[in-house]
Figure 1: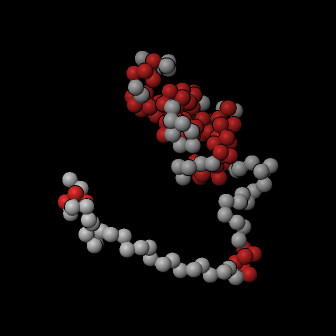
Figure 2: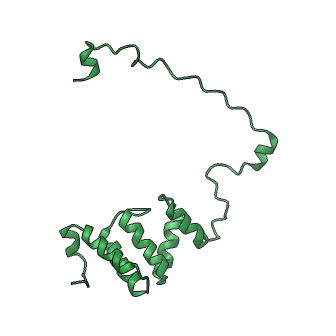
Figure 3: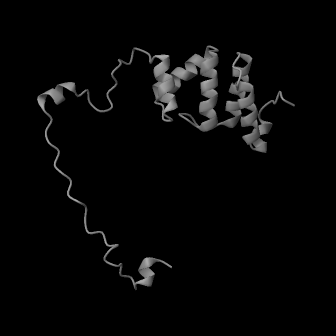
Length: 144
């Protein structure tokens, strides 16, 4: 039963929206603030300069990486960088910056394990356990 129904279609006074609180008018920026402002959403690096790896890892760790960071991880993983392969597997496992794909995450964790990442085999096992039966059929499980 809703509140409107209980009160015969009339909301009590404490529920009725009495309007928005007036927002203070923004003050104009000072000349020093105008000079220091780089603009919202403007990249500080030119597009021709690639992101540095620590910046990429930090951006992925926020949980909402941009397309440049995702592309940097993929490029580095293609060149068999163990850290990048493991990071890309983590991204696929959690759907961070990419569509969640447990089968892809499983394959990447196995690749990271072959490249020498010590925790990757355990992570692959965890991902395999969380996969559906249909997803498990799409991958080769070396643990069996």
